[in-house]
Image 1 (cartoon, rainbow, N blue to C red):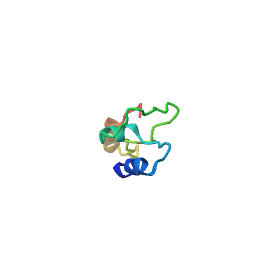
Image 2 (image 1 turned 180 degrees about the vertical axis):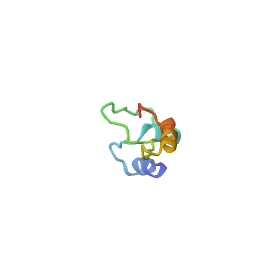
Image 3 (image 1 turned 90 degrees about the vertical axis):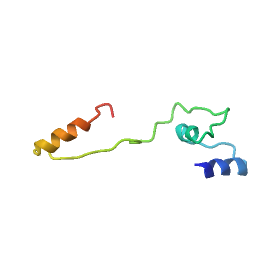
Length: 71
């Protein structure tokens, strides 16, 4: 990410779209940034999927405890 920001600054690009959270974490967020409200977040970012057989009651119950309906 730092390389991309450096390249943006060095090569005089007119604009660039980067994940705000990543740029904030690196303390590289400029004061004149714009949030693109029409952009969708990266699908499944930070999410995992677990698949199991419903017939395997023990494993199914364990997996259900990890489920987060909103995700």
